Image (tube, rainbow, N blue to C red):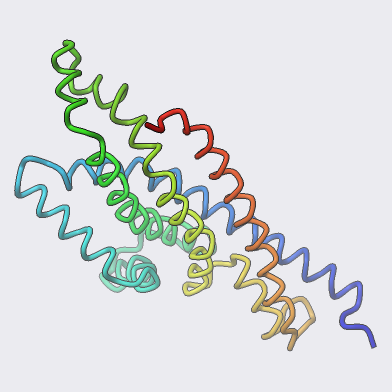
Length: 229
């Protein structure tokens, strides 16, 4: 007896592809939202205005100190418990809620990486820019930012690879991403039930996706080698 029939395999792959597209969508939405927000938060963490600095650091501590899965549940369910229905219904509402949770979570993680990269740039370069008549804005974008990017690529790469795998947490609110799709064939989906292999087969998708992301990030790091001193 064959491990699975051609119809079974085709049905499962089509479902996994559909779930993987949702996973990709969540991945890119998170990056687009979290990267700029993380940079803004890092400015708050370095602010000379003490109340803003301590408020931002407290938020960083709370977000980084609590599990992402709990943040997803809270953002999705708490507004409804308070009588405020902001997410709507169906898969689109679940996707909106989980996107907000991922963007907030990863923005605070990215903010610490940005902060470390900015503070690693020698202060003397800022002073030299001021002596040359440059504004602080010009110094940041022409001197600090480019050197910061070089320094943060390795730790940022680790977080981005983690994001690839963390997208699986979206299933906690029944978002139909790839893990949810793979697991659905255990419970019953499109006439099939009791199938375990589709869930484990999702690892192939994650490995391929992580490999592609790793290659792209390594190429980016090599392109920034000219900042090496």
